[in-house]
Image 1: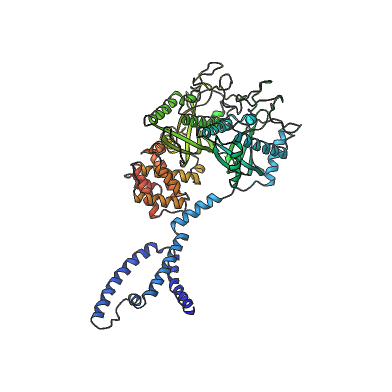
Image 2: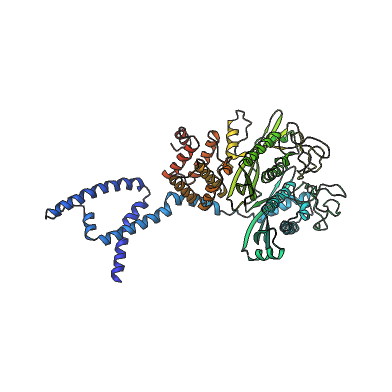
Length: 638
């Protein structure tokens, strides 16, 4: 035993100089060249030793390390093994991969700091200045009750009981999500739902709306079950699911000056204006007083749900917003983003159904023709596109362009879905969850003004205010007005990946082109890294196969960026049609994608050899090989 302890101590003593050398931080290239010369000297000494030995004489000019190795081979191999272990430990703790991982892990685990008691008091006092009866505890009780009722309505598959409390886009979101699940023959069931904590985390005030953000910490058991399963069996499965905590931020809007009820909370199923029974119809109008119950003019309305992300931070400056407000004072980001969310869910719905005509009232004829051509191309190959578990992470206006004939609003939507392209009639299986970052461009004719009376009721005719019907005609069933030309409200004119839009906006010669706020440009959250890696995988698989070198590069990126590689494999096995619009084309869009990769490579302040190879490979795939040196120089990597 003592011999083993002494041997171990000796090994550590011999290994210490190696640890100190590597820890110096500058020896990677130096040790590489030194090892080459060492190998050269070793080879010479080995020949000399053999010659001297065969001559029968002892040579003192041989390399002592070689002689030591020959005399003590077992001990020498053990020493090399310890040195290798120490080198691996150093690489894993201080190498390029580890330094990149640490940056991303710090960003991913950063918790938003809760607001101080003074901040919350200031928000409450601000609201009480125009609404003396506002009480935060009563409001949070209202939020808790709505949260549980929404969960119950979701599980039951009917949103009528909560229609009064949802903006049109939030209602559309739930409706489309439920329809997507029904289309795949499943429904979502929860058990043991409990609210653990509620906290006001932000207040925003504009001339159009007050927006109050509430962070909800809850837990539940959650499972998808076949639609045909009986309620008892479905609940039994839900009770066997693990109990998982989750955090959501719910954003509520209300018109400035709206007063809280003095007699307490409004009971469910009542009109917030006259108190008459409200049956939860999709139209959102009270049949007694005619009020639009979810406009925000009478009570708080749920306008947005964000998963686990702090809301209530100061909004980014939107280029062109104040200029348009000068001629359209009722314009608000809340309504514009709700309208964009409504159009987004309509866009998802028509693709999942394969029926672009369902957006006839909401999209321009050119966009409808583009969607129809895309779906026709899939049908010609007997393929269909599936969307499962679609969810929106954020909706934010990026810029507004006011032209002489048309005004454009560019809205960024970060979303994800289990997506796939499968043979017609085939099961969707378990497709990969693909994070997406798209820009939806809304158009409206110059001079059109926002109808302030409709508020958050954004699924209505911009001419007469009637609810939009389900017909595939581009006209209002009530007044006959044409609705898809932007003469009365915002309509969807373009939907494209972020890189394509960035290239388009940068190519515009006019200074009115919407900018990309720098604070959003540098955000490299987990979903964005996953999106970029999936796009790289799609680029690698575009020619019909992925070689070993490309696979090793993807694995290295997955390891460094904190993306499970099995998800990348799912993307590699997907039908190429799934990525047709996601892979940036050569040219400016490709440059925009390459810039994003450079930002990821530079998160730890440097670009190593492997990252440079990744950039070179991506540049070649994007047709930028000849321009790559110029681009790298522009990024400071020349």
